[in-house]
Image 1 (cartoon, one colour):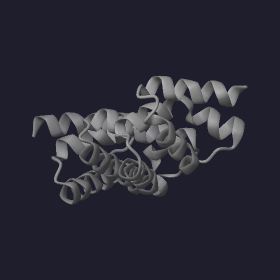
Image 2 (tube, helix red, strand yellow):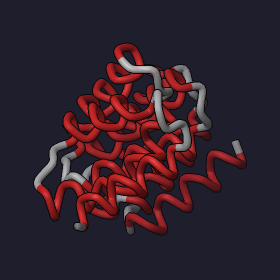
Image 3 (cartoon, rainbow, N blue to C red):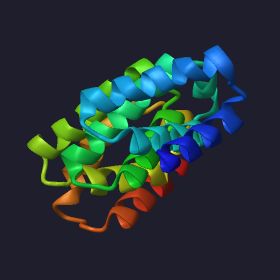
Length: 173
């Protein structure tokens, strides 16, 4: 209970929410915890972590809950810790200027790429965070094409850092 209260205090501090508004966040935390089987403490911690990564979500409990839920699903599907999974998801969303309700489509693309391609979700995500913003902003490449490109080259080049850096450099030429 003490850990939960600590996490709620942290969430309150970054959202500025109190009273009934904070109760809305608590309700969403319980909802996500029930839907994902994660503890309320972990979900509250994820709310804060994701809110720090995407401050625009701090004003909308439902949007923050959706991205948190999708981060948990991504972590479970990829066998990653929740922290790195939420970092990858929010970074990719920021790079491609995606809204909270598009977070499910992001994890679907990453998971679909893993099924069709030969690269784990965490490796695709790691490569993506290195070049996604350049691909989107400089070349107009969309997320599905970027995932496809990573999957296409990943059987030849195994290091996600090299993949991401190579694509970034190519898009900057």
